[in-house]
Image 1 (spheres, one colour):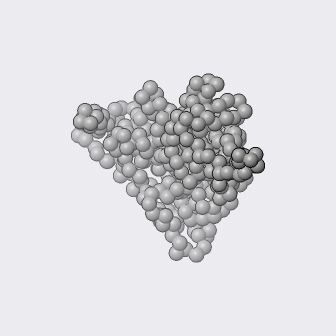
Image 2 (image 1 turned 60 degrees about the vertical axis):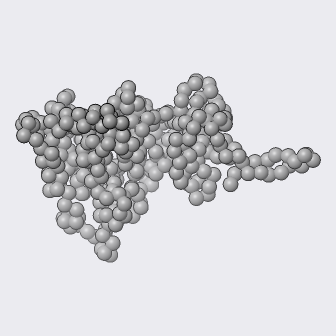
Image 3 (image 1 turned 135 degrees about the horizontal axis):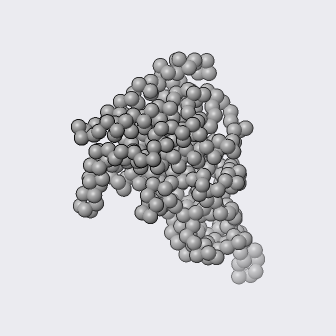
Length: 345
């Protein structure tokens, strides 16, 4: 526990536990003060507070990290990664804006722009009504731009999942998103075969099998997110670490590409997504849009990381370059259901 100094009535110096930050407290940095309004999140890393920047009156998010030796390396990594990506324009590259790092009573604090809600929370509030292809396209393009920017810097996020993609302001800027949480990020020079990365359900085959990997693992994560938005459920189980991890193979590094395809037969199964909830009212153009989406999904989820589509090439895919997708019948029905659900609250 972090300690701080005080004095007893006799004037002698004593060491006391640092008081826990509470709403109403002020966090001081070298450039400003942050008034804590409320806590909006907590995890093994520490807590996230909604704060007001006293210099600008802007509402920001401050991550107050635990002063714990077990998390010290993660803290240092996140700070280092934020410095690396600080050369990017956060609005153009669709990444969370980082303001500053400072210390408060021995605890490292990171100040970020205040965002709205993560994709998981968004889907929860929609009563798990899947997104339309137009909405998915909007999010897909932004995430691919973010990955392309990271690839240009030689950075792997390694923790792509719905919780780490935030809506900026879903009411005023629908489906405007940014990538957050670089606590698990690394540079390509730090990559080592066999590293335990990515969350269950969003883990690429090369990570699951202990094979050499590149930034293509993040492309896999984006593919899983797009499937999640289309299906309103995870493509792979998120509560099973064994998923796509065949420990029975004693030397997974010798598994050939053909064998990997037999282990995870994704392309064939993804074709079935075209026919999900097909309605007689749908026109040929609407089905064509679905086919374009599924084709991109198959390329994002190619089991061989070396053959997986790159962010740059994905941005040139026909699904992304369509100026306007035909509004499918089922998405109109979903909007009606969403409206009715809201009326019944």
